[in-house]
Length: 478
Image 1 (tube, rainbow, N blue to C red):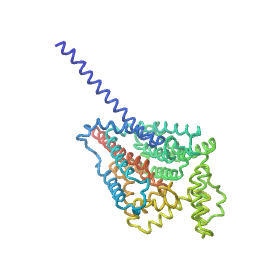
Image 2: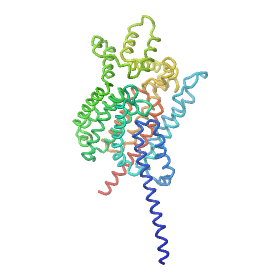
Image 3: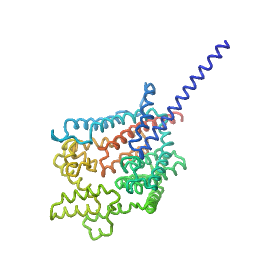
């Protein structure tokens, strides 16, 4: 009997050790997956190996955990808008391109854009659901990971490792750090009423950092406008009685905005990369558009070192397309182009996109029509018209526009059962923030952005599911 006990104990211990080791590995994978969502802001596509290692591989060993798994939020709220959007996009991609048979297909969008996006949606949802206590881990890990990311971006900025005066780190474009940093910062405001005083101070600090990243580090004007809209929306909502204790205080938000802008000016003075010229060029363009050209001289022209390739190409397009002795409209376009080539080029693309939409308002001209509308006249380097809504209208008409809005509103649908304040935070953080940003860029037509969005909304679905379960457990315990 003693021998049996002697030999059986080690077997049980070995099993316990293996189970403990397995749980620790899964815990580390959960941390790696959540931090990967954050570190994508400065790694871009280079974060994919980390997401595969900590996101895709653990699912292979966790398949049994989904057996009999019940969802507190119907999965259809996620699948029907995404299914309609991708289903129609794939249908038109094969059968309604808008190109002649002899015309080559553009490099973007392509089949990979949609297939990888669908895979990212599935990965984000399934991996998010498998993370233990996702809402708690999200609130614990993301703020500190954002702080580390800010330090990394600051290193790039002050060491001069940047594209002109714009930091993109290892990402493909400077918009990526600005967009993802601000999105995740807004999401950390969830469950505000339950946060400690120190946790709230950290989030106010992150809001300040996000303004610095947007204005001083990346000079992302469109994203800056979207950020201002969301901060203003939060400030207004915090004044109402039902949200006063559940959202950041309006005084804190105003102080955060002032501090962020002040530090951005300070960073510009230290590095010699002030964003004030790019911001002032917006007012100069507005004075030209409104005919108040007497005041236009008060605002300097956009600094060309910020984006010289775009400026050269924009000026070339303007010179080639402008006929001798242009009418007043053409003269105005040339003045805007001379003032700020980036804005001027966008206005030209928007104009031809609106004209194209009016020619086929219901179903548009075809999914790949932007090659003929934008790439051919403006140059092969331009694959979109810098406005997601005009992209939908020109290529797919009002029908595609409606499906696109439903796709953008997925965070609103999946958070229906959450408390009103958390639902508003999720919607402002993603749908509103990305929606305003896409007035100036066609993010859903570019691979990294739509792939990240799909993974993020999958995680948001899992986050909302976990939060509802947690609230139910607390209610039952009470």
